Length: 117
Image 1: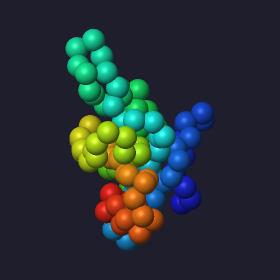
Image 2: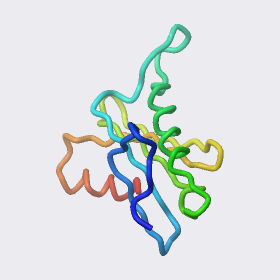
Image 3: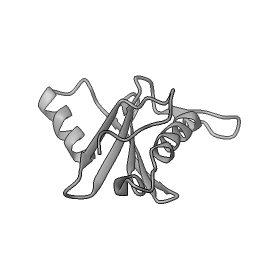
């Protein structure tokens, strides 16, 4: 089996698989702040990004692909005002929203990215 199929028009940035560990991570990156606002809250995760990563995870599910049933999602943003590392579980999928400080030395950025995956 090759790379999992995402529905046409839905293109994620990265898909990592470790078949020995039974793990798939669907990663999408953004180059904007992770928070938005609403009439009721000054600071909240951008709902469009929550729906987007959820749609990626659900669209790649196939009965003949055992990794697809519990694939994880990672929405990765640069650090703007603060570091974020939050995980939610939605219908069997862990979805992580995290930031990385791209102004840090390369070794630190790589260490953070490895920790996230």
